[in-house]
Length: 207
Image (cartoon, rainbow, N blue to C red; front, side, top):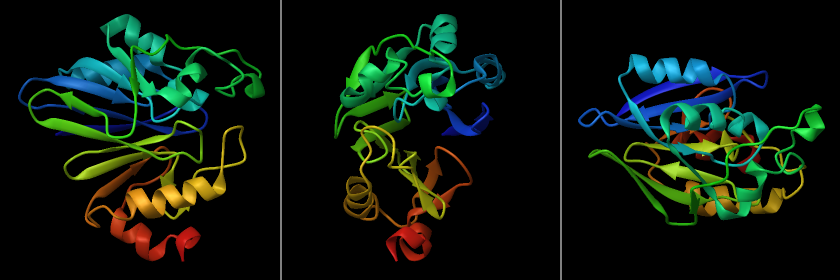
């Protein structure tokens, strides 16, 4: 799998560009800002972007959806419980930042267990992990899991925003992420990567 990490926007969100090396079909996970930078990286990798996948609906993960969709025609995918964040500046928290950011509406609503196929070689399974938002998800691939703002290296996502729940997030990580293969690489929404095994052993929120 082709994988490139782009750190975008004032909140330094991780945007992931992934692609099938055989078909050159690709997806963008969490294009939170700097759409032209993301598109340039896709062109450099010779990827045709088929999907825009949002791990949740906050502004720092969706703000470049429109730019990417306009340029590529890619479908916007998000969990059903966060779908209204795309078009509601209050729910996506951009109003709190003094802006009014919206995204094109979802083309496909995701649920627990949804499967996203990209080219011949990439299959992502949706894991619903509420807590940071009602519709927060993680995306499990063959050797990696994209955790959005659910699980970070040595930390977890904030739970004090509307729709957040500390208990729900902790339960989701323990029951749905820490039961995965410990060798899986963790690619979070902010900060450095990790592994499931490292977070199980060392993350202070679960000690």
